[in-house]
Every structure is written in structure tokens, then in C-alpha cells.
Image (cartoon, rainbow, N blue to C red):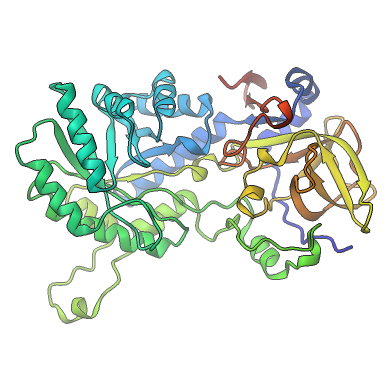
Amino acid sequence: MVSAISCKIDVPSWQTALIGSGKLDFIAELSDTPFHVLCPNQFAQTLSAWHTTAKEVGIKFGIRFGKKANKSAHFSREIALSALRGFDSGIDVASVEEFQSSLAAGVPGNKLIITGATPSRELIHLAVCHDATLTISNEVDSRIISQFVDEIDTPNQLRVLLRIANQTPSTRFGMSIDTALSLTARLSQGRANIEITGLGFHCNGYDLHERINMSHLAIDTLLKVRSLSPRADTISIGGGFPTSSVEYGVWRNLQSRLKNEMFIDSDKPKDQYPFGSPLSGQYSLRFIANQHRPLTRRDMESTRRSSDSMAQRAHRHNIKILAEPGRSLCQFAGASFFPVLSCHALPNAARTVTVVRGTSLSLSEQWFNSEYYPDPYLVRNGVIIDSGVATATAVSGSTCLDSDYLSKRMIQLPDRPRPGDFLVYPDTAGYQMDSNESAFHGYRIPQKYAFNPVTMTITEDR
């Protein structure tokens, strides 16, 4: 049996405080399931850091939290409070339900942006009534939206953002530059009920250089759009900003040394979210903002070429940069707690599995043919265990599915897990706990709680 390479992170201080507070058993008894704990304070600090970074690099800036990353009402309220304090903070929504819950949390309608596939009539109605911004991805969507806006016959304008396509051949979102310009001409001629406010794009991966190239392309295009829609002043550089749950050196070491035999099914996942990055979150925003456009041969032959960075160009042309991070805002702001049921050997192999209450549906990575890599830590009687009988184990859910594994890696735990212990996955607020959970087997969907490390209080997330 081969143990997997260690991928430990420093346990966030708020989690240490929570574990030492003696409240875990109370929460476990109250919820009667696995449960998630969020730290809105941490979320608010990260949100503030993004705004601070944007101010330091000199860009007019707005942030729209991707609500699909976490449905937490507490996180939405932190966005609302940030907006109330004068920051351009809002939420990126893709459904009527996300729109309504954002309003209920106090987020102003004009701080909501709707992204995603063809919007429903209900969603267009909400956008018009609440002065939200609606992203248009193609000509067909444009006709559908225009027709409905004409039908409702309101003096309100619908604010729209035209989404240009990234360079991924298989993407189903976005339009060409030529299409964006022709749509601008059509929507700007004789239509008082639709206003083009700018352009947006979304990169599917975490290549910062692709985002830099797209940012400069979007600025070029916006300057052309302005000839027909003079008030267009916004560029959304989308989401997909890298995070760093794991220190980058630890992450590189793990990736270089992983082997098939380190997994319970002897099969290393082919795809992997990067849990470590040299530049993440607001630091990646700073990097993008400070980069110049790549020079083409034509640029180099021109005496008029600009050497301005993205931030300098945005400042010179009075352009607001909008970012739509999801996971990056959630970094270290949530953890998932799974009660241990048993730890036993497999019947046909010299390997050990720890069974926890719940299912792997509470971690999204396994369901994308991937793996959640930050090591879970073991808690017993209100203490994080760091010694004992070292045990290499995979972690399974308590379902009847043979493939139900929260961790397929043979993780080296400091002691053999016992019934009554908790296995804690330390950084799950971004997508992990909110992407795939269901009431499989009739199990209750794990409850979310919010912990305030200042007042040492626990509240339900609602």
C-alpha cells in the first residue's frame, strides 16, 4: 500500500477557534447529518482585499460575486453591506431564484448582473424592473430579449452587456467581434428601451495570459462600440480566477510525484482543478491589470503603438473593470465536517477505507472525474489530532455505491479514525459544497452554519 503525497494546508484560524469552542458536537446533534460551516468574516476580508488591490493599481472597479459558487445567504449579505458602504459590490446570477435571493439579502438590483444561457422571460422581467444588467451572448438571445422588452412597454431601460467569445473552440457562450459591433448598431438605432453598457468575456480556464489578451481586445472593441453607444463604459473580465488553497510549492511537489497506486482504485484522475497557484485571487487581478498587450508584427512596425498596461488604458478611456470571481472570493471561508462511522480494510486488497456519514456529492471534484486535494484533518473530542497510529486511508460516503469516495487518495492520517471523530475538509466554500448535493438515499442535504470568530457564535445560514 502506497500513501499519497501530503497536501496539507495550515488550518485557518477561525476553524481552530471553532473546534476549540466545544460547539461541534452540538452542531452535529442539531443537524443530524454532515454539515458545512462558513466564515462570513473571512469572505468579507477577501472581498475588501479585492477592492483595495483595484484601488492600488488605479482602476475604476466593480466586483460581482458568482452566486453559483455558494448559495450562502450570509455571503450575499456581506456583498450587500459592502455595497451599502459605497463599494461597487454585487452578485452575478443566472436564475430567477438566485436573483430573488440576492434581492432578499439586500443587494441593490443595479448591482446584479445576469449571465449564462438564454434568459427566461421571468429573468428579463426582473432585470428591467430592478435595473440589473443582462449579458447577451448571441444574436438569437438578442432578438428574444428585445421582443420581450418591447412587449412589457415600460419607460425603464434594460441595461445589457455584450459578451464576446473566448478562444475555446467548443465554447457555447459569446459572439465574434464583428457580431458584437453589428448588434451594437442594431440595438442603438431607434431603441430607447435598451442601453448597451459595455462588453464582457469569460475564460474557461486559469491562463492569466489569455485573460490579459482578452482584456486588451475588449478595450479595443469597446472604443469602437462607443461610436454608436457613447455611454458604454464597462468591461467584465469574467470569472475563473485562480485560488491557492495549497501553498504553490506543496502543490507542485504533489503533482510531480502522484502515481496511480496512491489511489484506492489505482487510477490517478486525468483532470484536475489547480489547488495551488503562484498568483491567485486579487494578486492575479493586479497581474492582469499591470500587463501590456502582446505586440504583433504590425504593432512592432508601427510608430504609434501603445505600450500602456490594461489598467493605464482603462484609466485613460474612463473604463470600469468588472470582475466576476466565484471560488476566489470563497477561499478559506468554509469547511465541511463529516462524522466518522468506521475505518476498515477492503476485502480484496491491502487497503483501508474510512466511512463517513454523508456522500461524495458534498464535494464536487469527484463528480468531475477529479479529486479534492487539500488533506482533510482529523478532529476528536474538540482537538485536532496530530499523532497516534498513522493510517493511510481513502474516504468513502455511507451509500450503497461502490464508487462513492470523497477521497480516492490513500491519505496519511496521524491516527486511525474512530466512530465519533470528524474528518474536516478545510476549504470547500467555493463550489465544493454547493455544486452537486442531493437527497440521495433520502438523506437530508447537509445544513450550512455560519461561525463568527469574534463573538464565537453559530447561526444557521438562512
